[in-house]
Image (cartoon, rainbow, N blue to C red; front, side):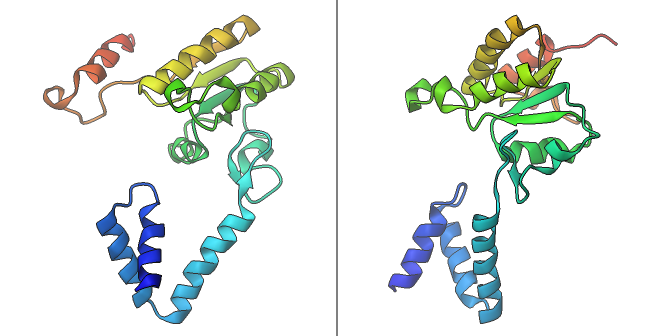
Length: 195
């Protein structure tokens, strides 16, 4: 059936969706009653048409400027730099950070042809210069590309007389040393704090 195969192929292109999961989702979707199937299709269409990137920080928004950038109660002197707009959602979930964000739109990856010009680094530098920023928190992922991007940004930003910090990495709460990998354990020693 061509329509079913096409649906499975499209679902399989989504991140984290393998062939079997795509098949299960496709069978579930075609089993929906017409009204639910229409609402799902309409929700996808509406999201695609209405959600765009905030011109200030790069977050997802339906407004001209995102909720974080338009919140006057947020600390505009501190910017947390993340890889993608969805990272903001994870950071906001903890309700600890009250500054603003800047989405890079990826990480440096020379093997994939992603250099500084493909990321929103110029926009970050402009914000630092225009918005009286005092601290940049680098919250890229603790993988090779994320660390390389954080190092690159730190070297670029430090001459601007701005404090540059990096989120800590280490053992999760409730973790057991027996099950922690060597890199995470080394980072937990490196990022230790005085008590």
